[in-house]
Amino acid sequence: MTGRVVAAATLGPHEGAVERLATAGCEIDRLPAGATAWTAALIAQFAPTADAYLGTWRGLGLPRAVLAASPRLRVITSPIIGTEYIDVEAATALGVVVAHGAMPENFDGMAEAGVMLIAAARKALAGKMDVVRRGEWKTAASGRLVQGSTVGLLGFGRIGRGVAQRLRGWGCEILATDPYIDPTVADELDVRLVELEDLLQRADVLVVLVTLTPETRHIIDTAALARMKSGAALINIGRGGCVDEDAVLTALESGRLGAAAVDTWEQEPPPADHPLRRHPAVIATAHDVGHSRELYAAIPAVAAENTLAALAGREPTYVRNASVLPAWRARLKGLSRESTDV
Image (cartoon, rainbow, N blue to C red):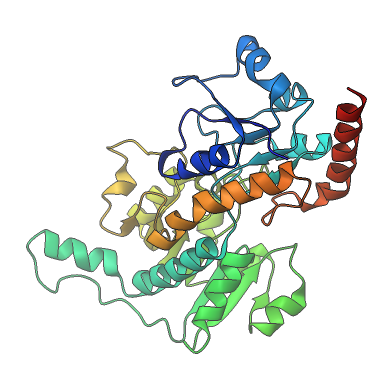
């Protein structure tokens, strides 16, 4: 079946998902441009007839109050991998599946970027580039080899495993911290699972790969940075809120950190005068370091396919809250009975 899809006012480069859904026969409702909160009027206008929600929901969110007021809801689709603006916990409690853009082009691109930044951090690339920009020549720190170093992965999901796989043969030790990973998965990639304290103390390069939750907010803070090796490098390609940026700046200025790469920020976009944007020891990117033409080509099709599958009662290809699937199937049966009774 198709249905009524409530889409965010804009999906930016992912608008093709809306076009595909409309072509497939879905009725599209767009939220008004400029909406910054779900008012009672907006909820009353869109929620009662929503079969699906589509968007990243940055700046607006998709909270429990909206989901609870959506009795026909079958699926929430984020075109990107991130779901931090969607109340996934509420969706799960209500029996609603959350689909997202967890396609290989995303994970492979981020894993490639992770390896690139690890090498750049060890080679002191940011400082070397800054020297040339200032008109100097060969006055930067020489950097170090990746070979013989210890790389620490904070989070060992698909991106972390992709980084580890690509680093095989580089001659470095790889450690990871992730309480949710089967140790046999790490063993297969020659990765040693350790506790966070050990990771902080031993890593020459620490790569933050965790998603943002109440438990991971500012998991890298002043205290964590103080436990790291002097001169170590920090890379954040997870989520901005997992790292205290003020603490990173202080650690860079004191020399506690030798280098940093920041792709995800606490506020996006960060202020134009944010000191980490122009710091000579920082590689700063706009939450796009792993993005590719291949990824942007894939996102609209995957978002539409995820949505259409769920509307038809089939499990989406990429599910964020897999534990909901039994309850989701029961919800769909209830919705089918209701439509038959009508």
